Image (cartoon, rainbow, N blue to C red; front, side):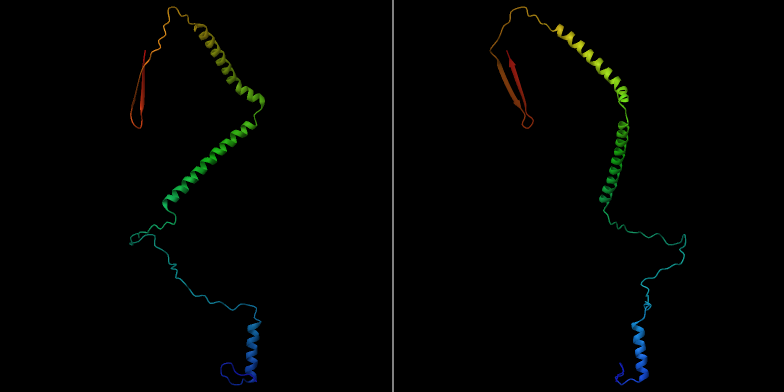
Length: 168
């Protein structure tokens, strides 16, 4: 004998059949029951006038990043872009040097080799003329003094200056 779930009395055969059908339908239902949506906010979709009588309202500045950090970020982006430009320039130069032939290198360096050869020849000629003139001939008596009058004076504390006066 089945009892009514809310009344506590025995159920009739029709009530038992209706309750069994309800349980079976709830157990084997394939689609989900609809979910009720409740609005959590209100959005005014009315068109906003292009101009009006209301004065502008001050919007406080609530930045997430401090100004010094934003400055460092901008500077690092600039440095990175500059280094990238230098790297691209170096890559282009090295690509150009990699495709140069031996004859091209010799033709480019030939004027520099000529200048170096001319400078070496001129320097050798000047050296020979100076060495020919530097012969010194002493004529007359030579005296040698062995007594030396030495006077030393130091002035200053942190940046000291020492002066040595040697008189014969």
